Image (cartoon, rainbow, N blue to C red; front, top):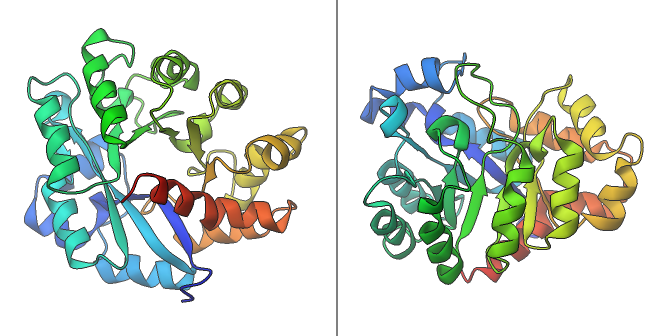
Length: 289
């Protein structure tokens, strides 16, 4: 793949990698009962091959700390770190903490100083917490001071046993305004609350969004729905072109299908390149990582 024009996949769940499952057999239960993934774990070579096929030169791997609620680490910060360290040319990490745990701040410090992760992934749905709970304010402060990303799961969670009352992007507005130097990245474009996502992003220049997710049809149909149809093409091209990030959410969806969906959209070519590559690289560089 080209080092000059390779894309960045900003949303890859490492939970489905076979080599990691072999080190943590409990992941099989978590994959099926909590993450609601119906495909079998795949060897790391499958992920790397998909990245090559899709011209993706860098993948951002995620973990989810759901020990308190589901007795699950998906797959766990240590396993993410091992994988990133072994394949530094291909991967970077987004770790996870339980923001309500007593050792949340020390774990967050470890993500920064030991693992050198880009940021932390928090999911109000999987971890069952209110993002506006005052116990999280110290977490937000430390993230802001450390220049780490706060990646929030927003939008519809597949597992209907999980609450979704805290998954609307509107709840992030108070956090983004109070911690206006903290970069907040929202997954799934907040679908189905697209207009709410736009409102939050219009008001807060420190909020980004990832295009991951396929809810309204095929990958191309969904990307067209959230980025092009109706007034959304104007929003994408004129207002949000520098704060949208490509994400496949592998292994829920093949990476090449999601890249192809963006490439086929009827939007300006420079905006496509911003989504697929440039915005992510600028964001990573701004963190000094």
